[in-house]
Length: 116
Image 1 (tube, rainbow, N blue to C red):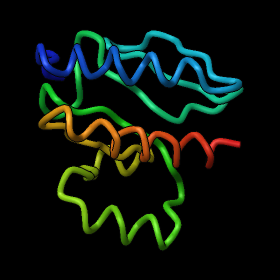
Image 2 (cartoon, one colour):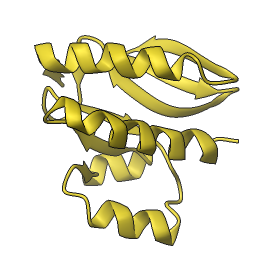
Image 3 (tube, rainbow, N blue to C red):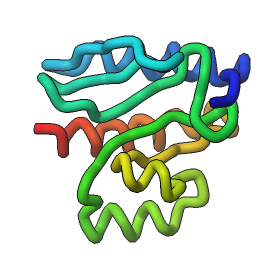
Image 4 (cartoon, helix red, strand yellow):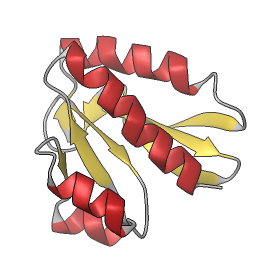
């Protein structure tokens, strides 16, 4: 696991503030990340001190990925999953600038909605 970048610390803080406003959301620390749950189902993991892959990514969980979301994910170079992550049913979103925040929230919201 890679150390989190300074930029990602800021972006994680902004994303966390939004997620914590959503109904039925709780957070628990895990392996240098903060995992977000809707009731008892995990839907996202934002880095606190460590991240999977590089220093600018977070994970979300949508399994199985519906065809429309799979098509959208395949067309977005920021969205990926290694074989190890696929086994664990996680997908990565890699951020490169503050402009990615809206799309990051969109993917987290998709995962949140599927965690009903």
